[in-house]
Length: 188
Image (cartoon, rainbow, N blue to C red):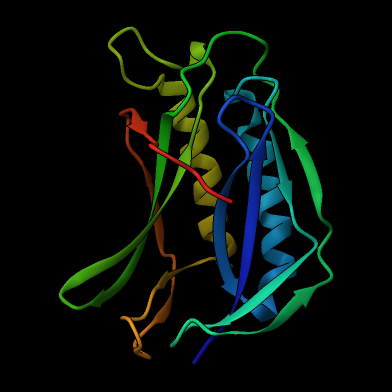
């Protein structure tokens, strides 16, 4: 059993928000993970409309990875709010990029992977062929690689209903494809 720290990052300031991206770390690494996520969002903030902000927590819940039960809390991180700097202008709500968090684990004949949707991108971050601008893809890939190098995040394979077969798996690589991803909904 791994005691995971749940790190919800709240997206706010635009139509259709607030939303949340949930990251997982071990409870022992939660404070360091929040610091690494702060660096990550500061690295990518110019790719989004200026009204957008991200709020990172200073504390949160801990979860048993095997069965998903809440078992305590973590605290001590320096929570913060980061404002995007992409400028005022047009954007397409619900459209943007996606980071795929890759692991080496295979569970139930499937590779364990996670995703973080980076939505909405600032209007100038799209290429003339309808894909994401190469510079933006490079910024996202570099920031994601830095998170992987920090070795603080993992993907949670949730347990089957009523089961205890969940698992926290370390992220080993990240991939940002040069294609637009859409997000149908976010919930907090």
